[in-house]
Amino acid sequence: MRFRLIGLVCLLALLPAAPAWAHAGGRAQLYIATVTVAPDNGGWSATAVLRDLDSGAPEPGFGVEVSGTGPSGAAFGPLAMADPQGTGRYQATLPGVGEGAWTVTVRGSEVPGGNAALAVQRSYTVTLRPGQAVDLSKAGASSSGKHSGSSALPLGFGVLTVVAVAVGGGAWFGRRRRPMVPAR
Image 1 (cartoon, one colour):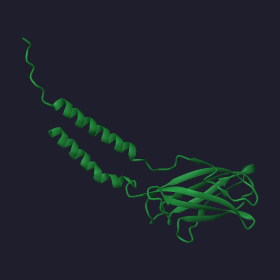
Image 2: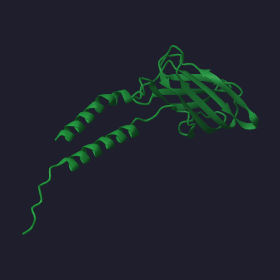
Image 3: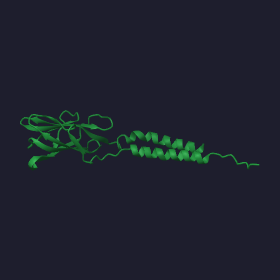
């Protein structure tokens, strides 16, 4: 009984900590929901929507940059993307971008004095064609491994497993056994 009580107390001690894991130390976990590259006044522009991974809420007020490499060594950026309406929808005009195969990289991060966040970076491979907008989030997206967040889920399962084994083992070995009576 004593081991079960200790195990229950350990489990209850973990429950209040679960909401704190949701934001990785109180910092927003950014993700890039959508990126669109579209023709704009004879050139191209990019629009990216930044959201919080946990709540899905738009995340205005962060530093978002776009850069890219294209055909024949063409390149641009990194360029700062602006969020003029404060809605988490960041925009930038892309200088020197023409049609052809491009790799476009978008990076979102916290800014000094702003809200705390875990940075995110995604790269997309796309072919730009005159007069056609492209939703990069549906094109070939690849993560660069620069997402600096970590999941608390494996840690939570690990702790829960250790507690369960400790409680179960304590109950198994701590139970009272009947004394053996020799056969006559």
